[in-house]
Length: 340
Image (cartoon, rainbow, N blue to C red):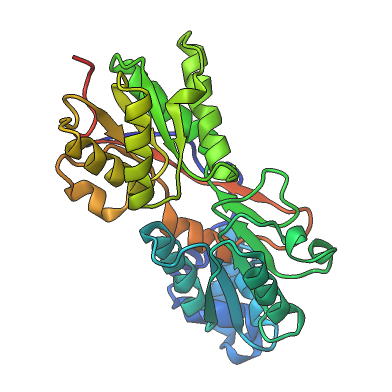
């Protein structure tokens, strides 16, 4: 397996609570208690924790710390699709920090529906929850007028906007898309199709911009007929690939914007008698676990999903908002091959 690093966490300058725990030689719970209830920690232990925090430049002005000082010790996490393996990994990261800080999580399967997300924000406004993490597309200002200026503990992760008014966490989707298409080009492919996500999705637009940039750098004109939009699902991938191959049968490689779409693309290719990767190379995005065990194993882009969830819970809350750009990696397996 080959891994190509795309970009590191450019904004992260704060060690997490686990590093402080290790350096001080105490439990994570003790570190948390030292900052939330220092009077309950023995003086020698407190001094070790504060010394370790100072050495590591750790500051407890995180979302988790803010939640801990409120009343319900509950946060709301809104995900577009809780059945999606990628979001499940993000939630693992959220839950790990919640557990370390004695917090409870309320999960909302929002399907990106504004009425559901507005009711979740209302839980915070009415003090039934202490904060909210958004994994979907809608910005806080879309959920309620002026909400971004009300001091609400809100973090936007995964599908965030570059000009977010709140702390945000994600990857550089344009760079990741460009890297995958550059890889396909390096293997001789010139007729590269795209199985994209929803047409209005910020993630879709960013990854498509990366596709266009890679083609432009190679002197290849962008052809919109080689792009087919679909729901981020296996069924969506099957339907989109059928339509794209019927319209553009000379395509030799596919850039699929999720692993689910790629799995659907492989199934559609097989039903049409095409061999992957001999007749059609197929690449994905997300690096969900099943991709490694497909036949052939799926070439993809991995997102640090669990780390994304942890970073969302540990994002700084004071203004101005900070955007944390995390690593993405190209994972080379056998679903992509050089053009014969």
